[in-house]
Image (tube, rainbow, N blue to C red; front, side, top):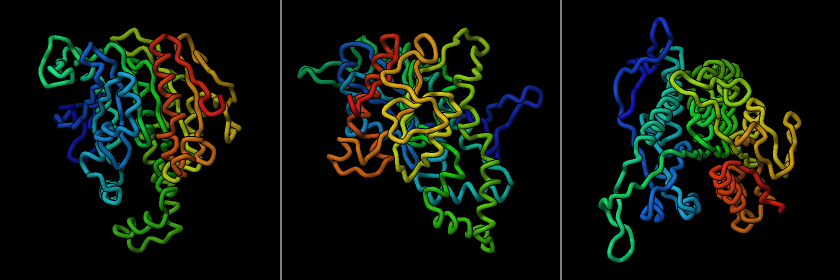
Length: 372
């Protein structure tokens, strides 16, 4: 159960004096925990996993997408975001719900800010799982349900992986999560108005006509600019500067001034997340583009791999690209979509895993797995 900060109108209820959100109720938030076999021998490090949209934390169970992390001895644990939990895993229904509330109350509901709050409280919940004892080694040497006196998780170290919408959620979450050691947001972008147009402008027009049947296309495009302005208070881009360039650390009650290291990944030709949004996020972060620069971004500093500790002692941050037309493992399986190539390429697996493992050693490193 996690705190819900929204009232009946689905907007945050805030303290009149401080502006701080005020919990209104508790909500059941589904989550999935996957433990590697190494957990039978002692506590393992958890990776917070945030799913895409539409989606659920059941994505954690994908051997194809996350098997390499399980094999490396990491636990994966992730929760379901607010929109998928409350509206369902139907993108058309989600769009209808968002614009229904917008038409009724003239404000976008706080689905995304609530997810940000959920992620922070879920992180706290994971920190309290150090005593979790669910598995023991059976007579055949494999796992079976039951305690053995040895906890499965070591939550003193926390990592993060977010894909697609999980990469977007990372933008509003990471500046407030110094407890994380390293994070790898993959094929995220943000800028919801641009994303809706990029994914399917015709379908979007059809959905809007359900509520506004007389709306002309030209009025729709103008309206979407206003829509984005209304979304800005929840857009992850609005928070990114607070990760490195204008940090808010330390928070009250904490002395932690070290932000997480980050590896941001784009899939060139992504038909679901605009490449421009991914590149704008990197610019807002102030991170460099790490070689190979398949499509050089002129607004970003270009640096060679390997890259390590460019932000500060023990803190590395950079932005990388994968092109399905030139990535060997994507070519070998015929994966031509940039959104998915960057997620499942063997080269991307190796790069993220190296990033996590070197973070655990104290100096996270971004390497070039495409040309070296």
